[in-house]
Every structure is written in structure tokens, then in C-alpha cells.
Length: 361
Image (tube, rainbow, N blue to C red; front, side, top):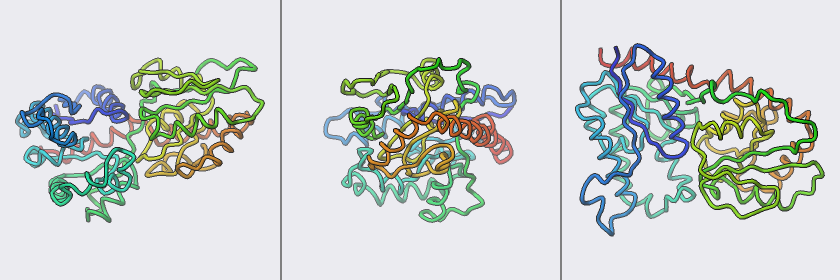
């Protein structure tokens, strides 16, 4: 049996990645997994509870405490998969056993779009030299890198000088045993359903979507369904679904009952929810940011927009709502692409095999 540890951030979309990893590892009879969830919640030290300490530092200290308690003696594992920003703060554990890094962006990429993530220019400058050195040490200690896409792989090569042979871009994919097209045909005359899923409503472009809901003049009946943790202003023909959990039956049903997925995000590195939508056979309207163009094929499986460009968003939504044949053809292309590229069992299975062959024997 292979003794592996999985150290995984649990925030928003990263929680989905962790859930999928648990399913994949549980189905491999040769792997005994130890799960270390990193929630940045439990106080790890007196410093993490003191007033005046920046919240980012407090969060890191809490995450470090969770990791150290969960990992213990790192040498007891053949390999550890690190999918957490806090890895650079526990370099002794990373160096103690073969380390495999999974990442949705690099620190350089985070700083480039950081303001919309609440990552101010002051925070970017504060301790930047230390962070850069810690990141370089982390990357030097890693056995292999599995960035989510080529966009991240390029940053590893160009910004950090990581040798290409140490990098294998692999999309995390989605659980295609859960996210499948709906089995029931929509009744004739049912309003076209658009779906938005985004925890941070403003950053994910929700305000642009509400503007379209108020201003569109199309005659075709439609509904907009919104899944978010944030408060949303009441708007005619808009239904809000608060508090739905990742991979939950209620969330999956919403995907299956929808006709179009739309995410006009203003800052993003990738989009697991776009892949979930494609796995359910939906055309996707989203933004040309980060690695998202590696998910959505422009004009084939949906449309890619420039961030914040309302006129293009309105045009594409009007087009998809009124053109059923276009929705059908793009949805079929989405499903085909998702099955070919975004199956978490296939993709994560490749990483498990690398851990087996490159871990401590």
C-alpha cells in the first residue's frame, strides 16, 4: 500500500478539488490516504489571536498550525501532495519527503490580479522579498509540479525558472459521475434558464449579469438562477440560491435544469464551475482570463469576453437565449470537450501514478 498525504486548501472552488481528490483516492485500492484540510481557521499560536496582526499573517499562521498537526512526521509518507498556499511556510515538511505541487496560479500571477482578490498593493509589497525567497525554496524542494493549465506552467518556467521536465500541466477536472446532462427533456415553452455560480458575487461579475437582466429587451421567456454566498438585490426573473455546497445534489440539479452557464468574472485563474457546466452539456459564456481559454473553445463550446465588457456580454446572452439551435450545438460540443479533457478520475489518476513511481520507494 502507498502511504500518501494530501494537504489541501478548502476555500470555495478549491473545496471542490479536495472533494474530487477524496473520491479518486478512495477508488484506488493501492493507496492509503491521509487528508490534511487547510481551512485557515483554528488558532495556531498566541500571535494568530492578537489584535493588530494583519489578517493575512493570522490566516497563514492558522494554516501552518493545521498542517503541522495533520502531517506530524512527514517522513512516514512515501509522497505528499501539496495543494495549499501555505506550503512555502512549512519548508521543513515539504523537504522531508517527495513533494508534488498542484496549483491554480503562481504568486506572480496572484499579484498581477490581486486587487480584486483583496490583495492590496501594500500587501503585495509587504514582505515581498521574503515571500519570493520562500517561494523559490519551495519550488526548489518540490519533486514535480502539476499546474492546472499551461497558463500557470508558463509562469513556472518564465517567472521562476523551473525546468520544463519538472512540470506537467493537468486540469483537475470534475467528477463526471455527478455532473452529467439532465435525463429529463425540458417541456416545450419552458423559459430559457441561465445559471451563474460564484461565491464572490462582485468579483465574478454578478453586477454585470444583473444589469443585463434589467435591460435586455428580448421577447423569449428566460430566468436567471444565481448561486452565491453574497447578498443579491431583488431583480425580476432572477432566482437566488444561497448556501449550496460544492458537489451537492441541489447544485448539480441546477446545472442539469439549465440551458446556458454564464460567468462574466472580473478576476480568475481558471474555472471549475465552467467545466462542471460543460460536463452537463451547457454552452458557457465567460471571460478571457488566466487559463480559462484552455477550457472554453471560442465560438464552439461558448463565448469568451473581455473582463468588464458589458456590451459583448449582453449581445452573447441575447443570442443564446433566442437561438435554441445554437444552444444545442454548443452544448453538445461542450459535453464532448468535457468528456475528453476534464474527467477528474483520469486526470487525478495520472498524478497518483506519478506519486507512486516518483515517491519514496
